[in-house]
Amino acid sequence: MAERRMFAKTIIDSDAFLDMPLSAQALYFHLSMRADDDGFVNNPKKIQRMIGASDDDCKLLIMKRFILAFESGVIVIKHWRIHNYIQKDRYKETLYTEEKSRLAIDDKNAYTEAEKKPCIQSVSNMDTQDRLVKDSLEIGQERRNNIAAIVQHLNERAGTNYRASSKATARHIEARLNEGFSVEDFFAVIDKKCAEWKGGDMEKYLRPETLFGSKFESYLNARTGSGSRRGANGVLLDDRQTDDLDDIF
Image (cartoon, rainbow, N blue to C red; front, top):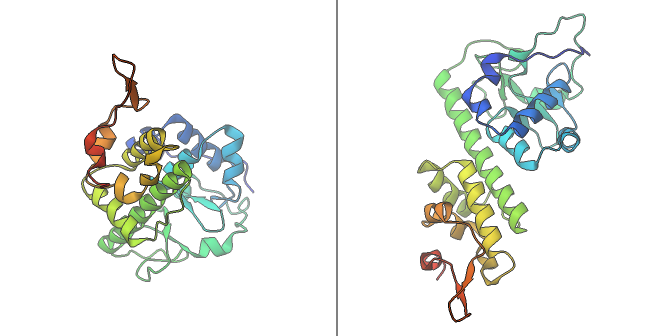
């Protein structure tokens, strides 16, 4: 396996890459440095822990499609073939041939998913394909990745077990995504409401239909705080906005 790795400035100088936190950028570089000659990494969690990156950094790389993840836990660097060219006498094929067989190469020489895409070339077939069809499929996959990342973040923060495959859950998330809210906005709402509601009577409302409903924007812009204060007579007052309850009762 070749020891040297390179990075294309067209990728790492892009706004999509530079807008990510430095911790996510560092994780990307470390994963790329440790990838095999086809761009696959079998221990992303270990590398993540080794450099002190968070699960959110990994989820962000997946959401932004800088890496593609498989159910096996293996990941692949999406733009690997743009970053690196390895001479044949130094090239060693990946051990993860099953995962590789599920990939295609797009017209920019980047990996993309090949499953259920008969109109898109396989890794060994470099013929030009219908750009509109490919873009539509990739947008759909990106939306599914976004929903999965949001639901995973909610489950991790709230201790719940919601499924990204649930139509009701996906419908609430897609409604807000269609309004222009970002995945980071969802993370912010989840974090705010978990800090405010978890451990109290409101904890049972840490659910998609409440968090991602019509009050999503007000939750996003609500000021953070302890959720309570004392009046002049020392009585504990509830500091929650009354419109927080509009979608609950």
